[in-house]
Length: 324
Ligand SMILES: NC(=O)c1ccc[n+]([C@@H]2O[C@H](COP(=O)([O-])OP(=O)(O)OC[C@H]3O[C@@H](n4cnc5c(N)ncnc54)[C@H](OP(=O)(O)O)[C@@H]3O)[C@@H](O)[C@H]2O)c1
Image (cartoon, rainbow, N blue to C red):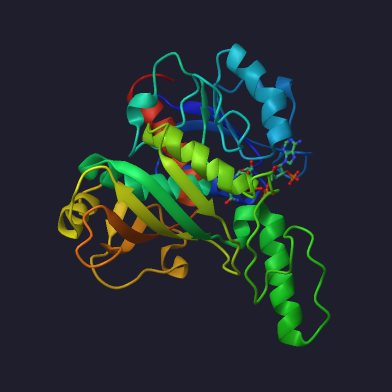
């Protein structure tokens, strides 16, 4: 197979460096790999349209502004853009793809591929087998999101707070998170809207509906930052369309692509950090004998399956189909 040159905008960030690692680990047939960031330094170029123009595939793992500035012009020139920012996720006619969940959303003419919100990717990967087995009517989710979900600055703020508290030093002021995260739990990710939901919670609702292909699905999320370095966890309550059983849903989860199903016991973020699959555990009925109301716990590395791995899998899908 011939190789394709790729550029990574945001190569110095936590998602960008994970994209580099995942491309290498998975042996994707890439040729030249250009590394770009906000400014030039060792092996990294400043981002400009001219510098990106020679690359047929450009990953964005930077800011919404950078994606908004460069992605449309690159797409116009025929490049494939795989964008981890939220900028184009809900744009009409733009596919929002999890290769294990909705690969058929990709068509030959598509050039722009946003990668969905990390929490929504983990949730949809876990719920796709439920949707397929018994339909989905409603989803309620409470999340436990890692500090690195807020980028390198978020991770650094957690680590600095942990160090200060351990040494008895004054704790640095919170700047990335609305409250200090070390030894704490912070129930706000993004700004609040008039209805009381945060930006992160709106993304989970809208993107989940789009990826599961269920525009009317009831989705209500409470998203919470916890002092975990990497990997998001989610407690999910869901109502199925049809009557079903834990056994039927367990069988569906056990054979679902991209899912590791734990029939018994638990799974925690530290156990899944550095892996590419979504782990599902604690599947049970909401109350004894319930046939439509169930619960599960899911965990995934949000830097990998929630961002970089999903982005690389989109490129693999395009290469497989000969679309790039
Ligand atoms: N962290 C996650 O778990 C996660 C999950 C899903 C999606 N995402 C999304 O992925 C993207 C990257 O997030 P991250 O967590 O990796 O952030 P990060 O660690 O803060 O890294 C940001 C990267 O963007 C670069 N950058 C900033 N402004 C730029 C500009 N104007 N032009 C070009 N490059 C610029 C930075 O370069 P410098 O080093 O030069 O500043 C850095 O390489 C964001 O859109 C985020 O919402 C993140």
